[in-house]
Amino acid sequence: MNWQYVWEAIPRFIDATVLTLHLSLWSIILSIIIGVLCAVVLVYKVRGLQWLVRAYIELSRNTPLLIQVFFLYFGLSKVGVKLDGFTCGIIGLAFLGGSYMAEAVRAGLEAVSKGQIESALSIGLTPVQAFRYVIFPQAFAISTPSIGANCLFLMKETSIISAVAVAELMFLAKDIIGMDYKTNEALFLLVVFYLIILLPVSIYIRVLERRLRQAKYGA
Image (cartoon, rainbow, N blue to C red; front, side, top):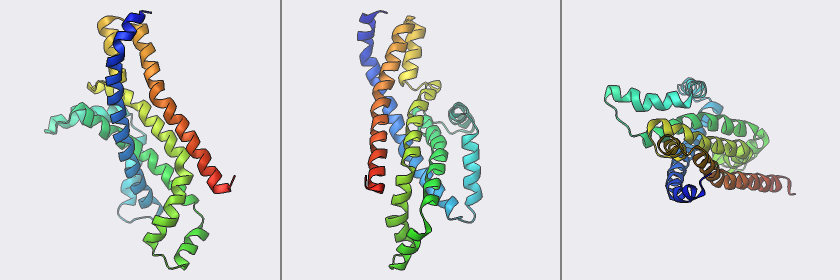
């Protein structure tokens, strides 16, 4: 292990980490938005959209992310739609993550008891108000463990985006291995920086889950 090389490579890994975080943040935000919209369509059986959402979920969950990203990056360019690797990465991750978020939120919505819904309507809330103030907050709390796991999943899946020349952590590690033949150093830094990203998020999600359980049961 060449520790001098490791020290000198740290600034490059910091830059790659920032790019990885940008990919993660945008994909998580978009996937949650997509997931909530799809879950509402499924739970409330919106005519004309329900079959489309189900088709999207099946397509997204049963095709590899790498194939989806290749289609966006290489396939669309054949018909005149040219997207840079970063944009393709965000779209691909959001497309994949949205289907998983949809199932997580759907389970949360279906777990809210009918008594809660009937009580909200009985005090004069409109269906939209009942959803906003009563149903959705409870559903989101119930779905938090699954949503948190999906967020970690998407953050790790950013490594796939290196295939379309986005200089995130995996791309940099492969570049160092290929150009400088520093395999041990590159893999060591890759593990360290992924831990720096993922470990705090994992701890925060566990703390959030614990607080939500305490709020629910008064523990």
